[in-house]
Length: 345
Ligand code: SAM
Image (cartoon, rainbow, N blue to C red):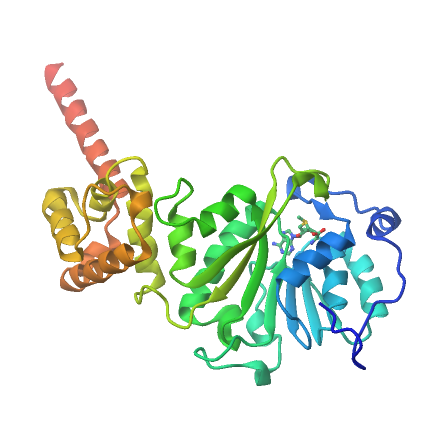
């Protein structure tokens, strides 16, 4: 929020409303691109306030569109706002905002999935990982089809301390389909507990800070929207490579309704499945009859640590793919059937 009363306080001058900007530049939402806009500046102010104190911050906004959230960020007394927008139709409207906030808004016509933010802000902003988060924030209301893969990518960046996290523990405030926001923040044992819950919570402090009803967007999406705030942890709750954690978690949730040993078994080739799954669960001290949703992050930590040791002993294990094995078995069976058929003729 803007620090009122200080000499450096910045407010945008009077501008056409977002609705007028949309009309002026003919920015009708493109359904295929899942564009849903926020026109109510009280609401965008609220989202931006929830991101924390942005005074003198460097902010990276993903998918600014017609610029509602962008205006609220500019009014929060930031030092610099860098926006990355894929749809070129929005650039002239954003340019108008940039003219109204000289030297504060940098516009990039590009794709957030490939844009390299690690080179965009001054080196001097960098903080050590153990220190307080740097004054760098990511804020965005992206289409749901982009925000979910993007958060997985950024979580991997958190674990490697690269990408947006070269500055330190950069905080993120992002919108998701409400159901996804609930999954990201779901606690052990809850109905929404999923792969995303574990992947996000082993690396970050994750908070569902706001729910926005679908009717607040134009056009209205079919679902409500959840705003989620992420602060990377100084020490991840699982200290293993991201890909290894992802593999264990993904397999565990393979069969959500079954006991966890069923999905975890898929980490191992069929010939050794029973024996190795038993070994994994026993050494990790995890009850095989827990459901995947009942596994806590600390259960996953033990599972990942033991699985890591098993992979170190047998490096082929890490590249094993049960789907590949199933496919090969199927084609072998088919060949056998064909041979039998031929010999009968
Ligand atoms: N932030 C605006 C708001 O809240 O009104 C627009 C939100 S709209 C849901 C998503 C925006 O993200 C659109 O402007 C869209 O063009 C943009 N967008 C979609 N995919 C993108 C990508 N890969 N990179 C950058 N921008 C993207």
